[in-house]
Amino acid sequence: MQIQENISLRPYNTFGIDTKARYFASFSDTDELEETLNFKLQTSNLILGGGSNILFTKDFDGLVLKNEIKGIAELHEDSEYVYVKAGAGENWHQFVQHCIQRNWAGIENLSLIPGNVGASPMQNIGAYGVEIDDVFWDLEAYHIQERKIVTFTRSDCEFGYRESVFKRKYKDQFVILNVTYQLRKKPRFNTSYGAINQELDRMGVGELSIKSISDAVINIRTSKLPNPKELGNAGSFFKNPAVDTVTFNVLQSKFENIVGYPTADGSVKLAAGWLIEQCGWKGFRKGDAGCHARQALVLVNYGNATGKEIYQLSDEILQSVKEKFGVTMEREVNII
Ligand code: FAD
Ligand code: EPU
Image (tube, rainbow, N blue to C red; front, side, top):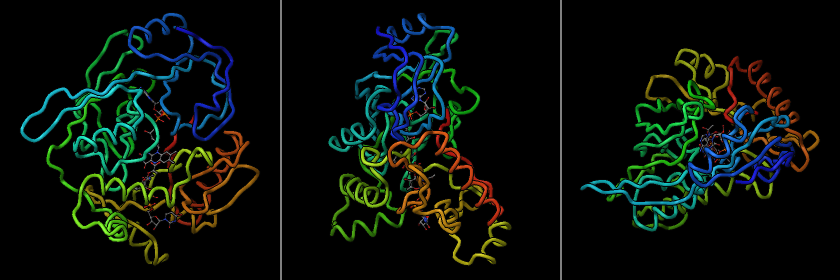
């Protein structure tokens, strides 16, 4: 176990924000995690994966624990599914590729999402018509105060749109150690998201495969989302807000091109990127903080923006969307 002091978190967050951690350690198994927690029990803890959904607005005056638990194992299979367990510190996209190579289906639409396996249920990551909720089997998590490992089934996680118990009632209480996914042996292709079919046509794909869907998703994503290695960002900064149908109809009568999608619960999900673009923010830059020119939902750091500057910009965006449309948006990124 090695605990570093006063280190820069810049290499550990995809926004590239240069704040400091009072203490920093990584762990690759539960014993090492316990050992580290014993050393600094009194400080506050922050569990870090790939740092791709975090905005540091100040120095962290506690212990940052980087989860490096590795390993991918096929646990068992039945007639329809294979059950695959992955360590929380595995890179998400590499795990997706591992599954595609073995023809295990279900997460191909989630290709190229940055970050690690451990955050996937915490965030209930989603893209192109699929979310973790659709393939989740169970996970093991370590309760920091009670010092014990607890298993969470799908219903225990209370998944919602970019939500789970780990972001709500159990916030900061558990360290996710590993996650088991239920993947299909015979794929059920999901091309419900319009852009996928367009891209498959453009690619000239005849017979569908999970690999071709993954390739299409990768192409779409690289065409509009900035690569954090080139331009600091944390993906969508805000959630797409939901409104009831009456509100949507009123909005549509005033803004005829407003983009909204009906959801299973009867509400309409508005495209936050459209709302932000209509307020004139797309491509906006102040200092090194900006709103991406190809995807207005993504805030970016051109180099040396501080977390406070990015946060301030997000506040201004929230206010202007509220003023123009009367819609309250919510941040998706975890603010520290
Ligand atoms: P981190 O940023 O390290 O952590 C996120 C939160 O989870 C923090 O609160 C952290 O404390 C907590 N956490 C992390 N690991 C653990 C653990 N093991 N135990 C307990 N708590 C933990 N997200 C989507 O859903 N869909 C997308 O399409 C998408 N596209 C993106 C595109 C880009 C370019 C970027 C930069 C981000 C995108 N994201 C997307 C957001 C991000 O990739 C996901 O939220 C991802 O799951 C974050 O993983 P991470 O390991 O980097 O988490
Ligand atoms: N749009 C605009 N202007 C923009 C951006 C978007 O008008 O600048 C409109 C367009 O009409 C477009 C619609 O918004 O058709 C939807 O845009 P897009 O397909 O890019 O998806 P999104 O709603 O902006 C969501 C997720 C992404 C996920 C994609 C694909 C959220 C908050 N974001 O983005 O997730 O990859 O769908 O499924 O739900 C993330 O969470 O970090 C993330 C990138």
